Structures are given as C-alpha cells and as structure tokens.
Amino acid sequence: MANTRVQRIIGIDPGSRLTGYGVIDSIPGKVAFVACGVIKTTVKYPLANRLNEIFDGINEVIQLHDPEVAAVEEIFMSNNANSALKLGQARGAAVVAAMQNGLGVYDYSAKKVKRAVVGYGQAEKGQVQHMIRVLLGLSKEPSEDAADALAVAICHANQQFF
Image: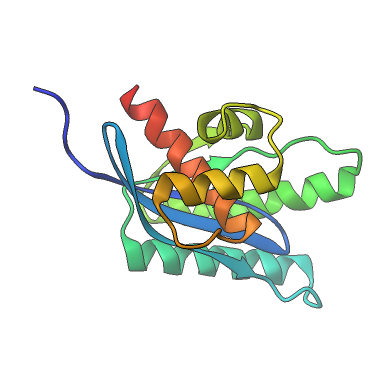
C-alpha cells in the first residue's frame, strides 16, 4: 500500500534582512498550503540582534504550525563575501531554531529548488512566485521571499515521495 501519511514541512529562505518561511502539508502527489510569510529584521540593529530576531521568528512559526521537518535553502557564493557571511549566519540562526524544536533539517540548492517548481534551475523570482501560486492554488502570488520558502518546502516534498 502506498504511503498516504501527511507530512508537514516548513521551508525557509534565509536572509539577514528578510527571512521567508512557508509551511505545507504533503502526501504523495499532492501539496497543500498551510501558511507563509516573512520575518523582517530591524535593519538598524546590529547583526547579532537580527540573528536573534530570525531565531525567535522561526521558533514562533514552528511552535504555531508544528512541522515535522525543515527544508532550508543553501547559501550561494556571491561576489560580496560580507553578504555571503551574513547570509550564512542568518541561515545558521534558522537551522538552530529548527534543530532546537527537534526538526530534521534538509538542505537544497537554489537551482534544485527552482527545478522542482519551475522545471528550470535558472528561473527568475517572478516565475517561482507564479508557479507557487498555481501549484498551491493561491488567490494571489506570495512575496518573493515567502514564495522561495514555499518552493523549498515543495522541493523537499518531491524528494520524499518521488
């Protein structure tokens, strides 16, 4: 008999200013929207304070929606090393929040995530937003960061069942 158990997944798109999150329920061949949003950090605060805001925000989302696993987008190396370091630290804050809540954490590259939802690893953010709206039957497109987080969650769902 096929696995028909529902798995709740939180997808996380880390950023030092905006961290997107998306929560879906998944069974083989079907995903359903639960929630999405963005954790906005206080830009005038030092990075350490913003990392704490990310940790607290992800923790709150996990407590509210009770996912079983977290799927997190990996950082990519940009030309700006300082930006990459901040992004890595934001990602670390989100991962620690998930781990502190007992969630398994799975990492996915941006290319793999885009392939999972758009079919093309170099897709633009607008294409991801559109496909997320279509795949989840949303009335409007979520913000870029929330759409990216939902895409990470869908990517994980695809890995689990296909």
